Length: 320
Ligand code: NAP
Ligand code: GDP
Image 1 (tube, protein in one colour):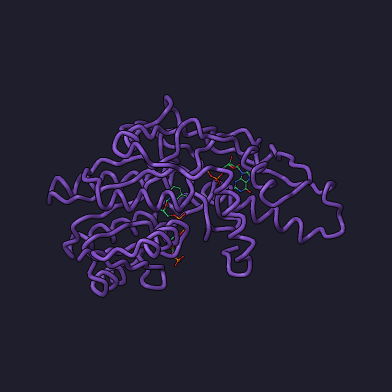
Image 2: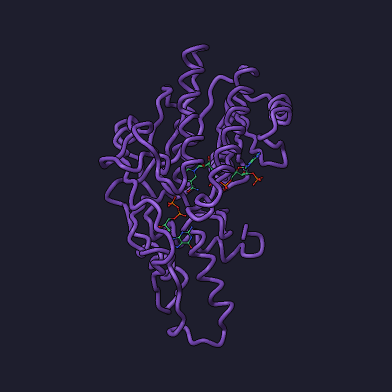
């Protein structure tokens, strides 16, 4: 019987994994979804206590200090230190407790800033990341280095996945979060805050120029792919888990899709005094496609509709 510990099990991706596993009900795996209440992973003793309690044979390591562009820009030191500590404690404790496999989570936003496109798994360390999120990026890049070092010294199968931008139910709707939950929360609240302004006269502000390009994966699709990696992908080298390059959208298109899902009829304006961050980070999913050619990603508009509906239905409990 496999015992799978999911660190970061209470977050956006962790909750999606829990939803997929609850539906699947595997008979040969027991899953435990840990949040920070189950143990602060910046603390070695509480990381060890969590592993001793749960005795995992396999780990999906999602826990991290995570945030959107604006939170990263002002907190690079915290992103660097927290994530270095969390990753070192989780990987070393997994080693000490004899875990068979660890799948950790990188991100396409840790790729080099000045690069050719599309970016792929072989290019993670090829140049400095975008200056807005260098703390997060270098901490994440080191996971790949750690995975190789554990393999070289002990032969361990500690690997990593590289998702593009993620969204879905249970997202982080606080100002510190990413663009999709930020837009959903701000657009919904604009309605609540301006009940007397006619719908067509309401003005919604998209931060930045609206021109940057992003690939977005629905958290439930990503969860299925991470489970596939846990069960079937036996290489230390990272693997990009992203929608196709053709599915890249501009931030303004994202705002338009959210407006449609919320039936918002007002005007969208771009505030160019706010940062754009990286213009694009187009990633190739050719490696994934070669190993899993038939995977069907949820249509972007459908996934946006489901995510908006989740937020509306769970407004009182959502992190905001
Ligand atoms: P999230 O919703 O912010 O969740 C973060 C998770 O980490 C929560 O379960 C949180 O626990 C846990 N956590 C944070 N600090 C912790 C600590 N000190 N000790 C123990 N647990 C701690 O993040 P997410 O979006 O699901 O991200 C999951 C993974 O995907 C991360 O590794 C992230 O870097 C990566 N990723 C995210 C995106 C994206 O667009 N969101 C894109 C690419 C990659 P509590 O909530 O219980 O405090
Ligand atoms: P990134 O993909 O790592 O750059 O992080 P984000 O998801 O935070 O931001 C993506 C893009 O969305 C950037 O160009 C932001 O300027 C833009 N953006 C527009 N409105 C918002 C918003 O309300 N919140 C956030 N976080 N970004 C926004």
